[in-house]
View 1 (tube, rainbow, N blue to C red):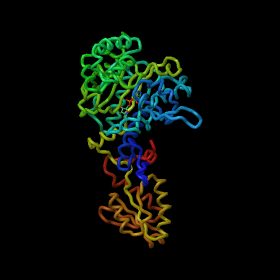
View 2: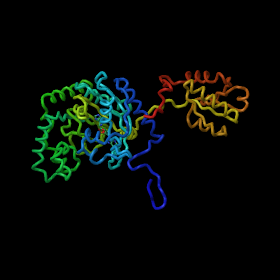
View 3: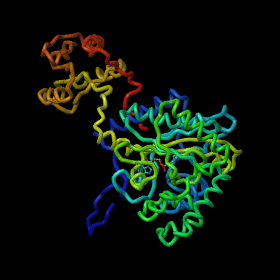
View 4: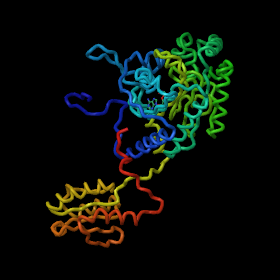
Length: 456
Ligand code: HAM
């Protein structure tokens, strides 16, 4: 609520948005694809709280990262707990893995989630303060085939929602041992040029030199061009792992760019890191546009995180994608979304008694799995017909005063205008029969249980 003098203007908090009915079909298309792909690859759904202990993100995402140092919505509760609106999903999933005894489940544990995250960023197109993510996590498996499979999963979900022509950037940042050697090489590269670095990078050079590679400032991106590559400093274990990931991607026909400067903005990563972009964003490996372009998703391996949060050493890998960015790209690319469960029948009624009987009849249709539109609040039959025409239904059922008294219903076929009187108790079966007969070839009606209205 914004106080403008004496009047209050009600508006959503800056950077947060409503998902309006017109956009719901895009959102539901993504949710459905995520659910279906997750089920096929045996991922189970997990929902973690939207708030977690602040310490969880400080320890996992990293105190020096932008997310933790600048973007968290943190607060103290009345009971004195320090909590934070989750800025991402991985930390909460790993917390749940440890807290809920998933350590003793058959490994790996494969989980997926969908939900809002919160980051106090500078709002702009594609960058929000409440952002929705879907994500996949595999905890308890070190094999490089899983890294490749996670990347493939994202491309499969993308293809399912009609998003092709994406670009995958990939890199390996090694394990803590080989990263130490890489850090040293980076410091040696940047130290003589320190005066040319931006203010933030000048201080980062001591604390987190890898993040210099991620800086969007012009001078820093210029200096990056000649910086050493992480892949040249990998130990033999990390080198072998990365090579195997690339071979699996080749095998899966997932195309990728090697980006030697891709480091990601969260501290928990080890070895494989990747990001996915729309092809039209013009991202090329390691370029300045690349770092400014908006990623559709990102992820990587985080072999140290379970241990960091108090568990035994446990390898893990995962990815998450920003749903607003997917929806926007679907809309820009004019991806066509077939309407599912669109009502093909309209129920029109005239008079008080017909209105009452309509309620029961609608319930009979619902139980029979037939979607029926109506506008019970309308009295005029003309305006009800207009609604039916607007919806483009194939049949309108008419319960006039006489029909209601006689226990009958008129079925009107909208295309031909032909009408027929049917006994009330037979109207559901007769409508179903006609719908089946008029169904365009190849069109399969989904069962009501998979309608487009579950929440996330
Ligand atoms: P992330 O790269 O911080 O990774 O976020 C993943 C995706 O969320 C981004 O690629 C982008 O599509 C979307 N996103 C991030 N911030 C915003 C924003 N302000 N507005 C709109 N979309 C945004 C993670 O969150 C990791 N937890 C991913 C992961 C899962 N790594 C392993 N497992």
